[in-house]
Length: 287
Image (cartoon, rainbow, N blue to C red; front, side, top):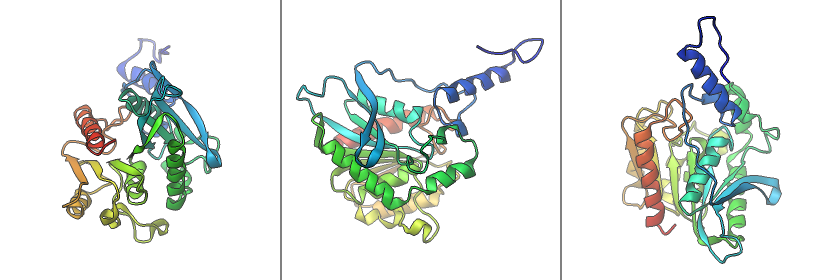
């Protein structure tokens, strides 16, 4: 219900505010919800969806085609790595999109130790968000990826020879790092993940430093208008990937978060093209 905020009735700004409030209440990350966003809502019919608790207490949202369990059917699987806002409604929808395409999609809650009350989706203070995210160091995250890979390998509905990973923003960088770490992965898709950090940050390396170590081909999906990831960094990564099976697609009119249809930076054309390219990339590499 829209509340009238003035005697002469509701104006466009009132409706936009109401729309944003509705989306936040529905579980989208409050920090960057677009006032006029109309995010895709993928139906769960024909799917099995819900939370699983992996070893070590790691929570993970899973979406998969119905009928796979107990039917002898095995599906390729993809690990979906969240943005800095954790596993919120948009990440769940991405999992459902993958499941509709025939994948078992799993989104681990990498920040659950530092955010046991799941406050990330409600926070609008970027500094507070960064404090929580920083608690998940690179080695811990890589350990959680390993836990997820092991769990997938033990499920009767998963083809353990067909495993991929994709991630967004924070998760885009994780995707590059995981592809250099785990030979179980056959393909990766890195959406606008940071490629370079400050020297010594978290005592870790960054994607540009491990480009030669990739064990799985990664498709990078980046926007030239991204203010946080200079085009020069993308071009440097492209140069380091030359001659390998990995590559980067740079969209000239896209900004950071261009696939995220709940954000103001959503770019429908770039998002559609990139999603189709990612699915082709997975299939071309046997996933």
